[in-house]
Length: 272
Image 1 (tube, rainbow, N blue to C red):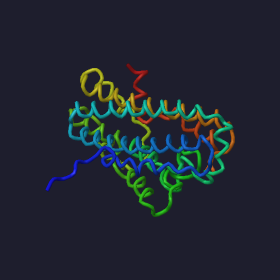
Image 2 (cartoon, one colour):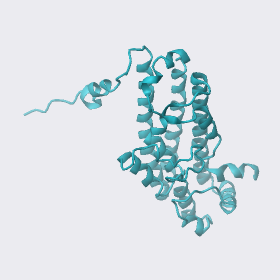
Image 3 (tube, rainbow, N blue to C red):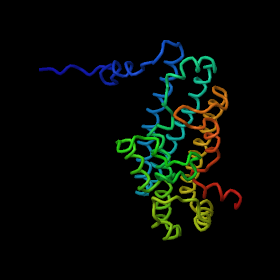
Image 4 (cartoon, rainbow, N blue to C red):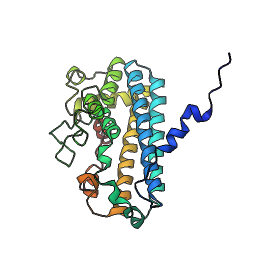
């Protein structure tokens, strides 16, 4: 008996996908707002998938697989930034025509973005709020006991991308301090001058590893670019009004700008 061939619609679950855009009003622009944010969540899922692969290849010492995956992540981030151009076609009047329907819904509740921040090394544990500008930990906007909150909290207890990079460098016989390699990975990391000395040697003596480091700088810059464009998009749309979900809106978003993901890689720029 022959098996019916899988169709495009079945493979991509098109019917289910298209049914997920469910506006809460009849306003013309709400479907666009929903679509953009749903696509962001799909990209966040893919970025998390790619970072998991990048960490595996880094810890396995596979330079070329690491470079390929990190390059893909940077390209996805560029796409995320460009999507803001579409969202900015919506005027403040158009957005405010349905904004009240969001009630307490807020981008703060994007568990995948919080997980991405944790994978990159952010460590705002519940009740700490360090660096968040909200007085709350990274996961406290998520429902207590939910799988989404658990994924964020789990990510904060695992090695970050930078921790995996340091293991990659150590395996290539670079003198990464043992106490940095063996540190508590659930604690914040703000940079280390000894690591910076190692990175200078990497750039001078190990071109392949230097390319990996520069790929991480590309990603760091891409994250900062996305944050900046996001801030300006919110500012032009709602000004200084409070954000949905009880946030301070633009004020909070501005506080997140120019925070390096990989501070050691930026610190060495003045030392070459």
